[in-house]
Image (cartoon, rainbow, N blue to C red; front, top):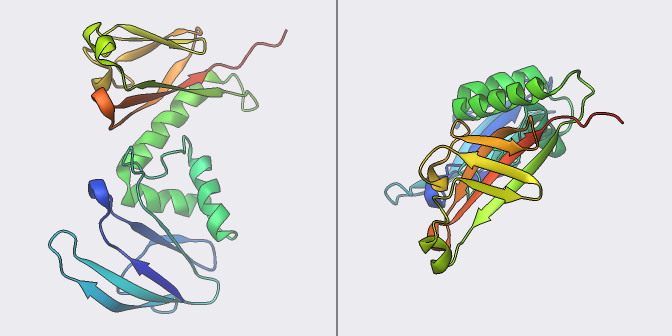
Length: 221
């Protein structure tokens, strides 16, 4: 028996749920239930405009599992910490265990969350471009910066062309770092690095920017 509430969260984040069948297949959760797999009963409803929500009691069939998540508070992304489909599979697996069909999970999420699928596909393509073979280890470095002082802002903190962090140097071609995309940021050092993702978070004096950079495998000495 599972109890689940679908109330919209702050910043417009909508809870999402999927059902994993006894055979490992994955499907989007339906409030109508699916005969032979799970039954759903609405036990409470709050009428409050866009914040209206329902609480459901879900009776799962033998071997059937329920998985839910809410997009990340800062980025609004589903599975914000994941860069590949394998990362997503591992995160869901930690909660539901086996059996869990990878292909079915990917197909379900592609249909439910096309933005997530596009992000993961793009990330995997970048990582694959850096590997010479499947065994190559690609390092991912996160460059975080933001929350400048008034003096830093007046000195052009958000408009400067380059930033450097722990040996990673990035250059932008857009006007402001807050509007940067992976198409407008290039890795200067180390040579061959690629930008995987760029996220912005709210905060003082323009908030924060977080850039993930994939570094090519180190050559063996």
